[in-house]
Length: 195
Image (cartoon, rainbow, N blue to C red; front, side, top):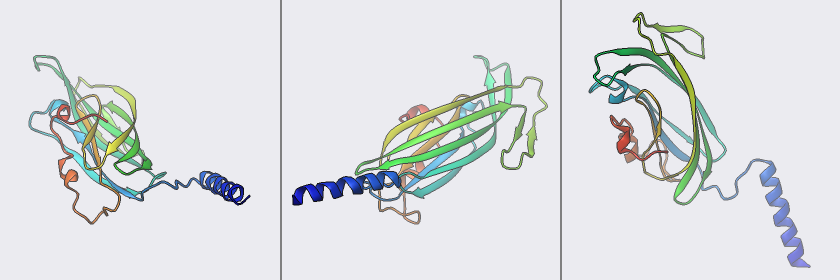
C-alpha cells in the first residue's frame, strides 16, 4: 500500500512539473556564447564583421535578437562581376534541455538581403545601397542539436554569413572565463563542425 501511495505521489509530482513547464532533470543554467556576422566567403577577402553576445539561462528559456545590417557580395567564379546586398538576421535561440555533457538547443534564423535594411525594432531605414546590381533574397534556417559543452558549432547560412555558438557547462557563470567564447569569430566556417 505504501508503494502505491509513493508511486502515485511521484506521478502527480511529475504531472505538475510537466504542466508548470519545469524540468526536474535540468542541470541548471548555462552560458551560451554566440557570434553573428560575415566571413571571407561574404566576398570581402580578409574582412569580416559581426557581433558577439552571450545568454545565461536554463531549460525552457529563449533569446530573440536582430543582427546587422551586414554587407555581402555575390560574385561570379572569376570575381569580375559582383552583386551587393545588405542583410538583416532575425534570430531565436531556445535552450530545450541541459544535461550532464550537452545542452539541447534550437536556433531559428530568418535572413533578408536587399538594397535597404530596416530594423524591425523601430522600422527605421538604416542603410541603402545605390549599386545597380543588388542581391534580393530571403529565407529561414532552423536547427535542433545537442551541443557538447565547450565546443564551437556553426549554422550554415548563405552569402558567407556565419552564426557560431558554444555552450559552457552548468556551474559556469557569465563572469567566469569561457575559452570557447574567444573562438567564435571564424573566417572559414567550413573548419568548424556544423550545428
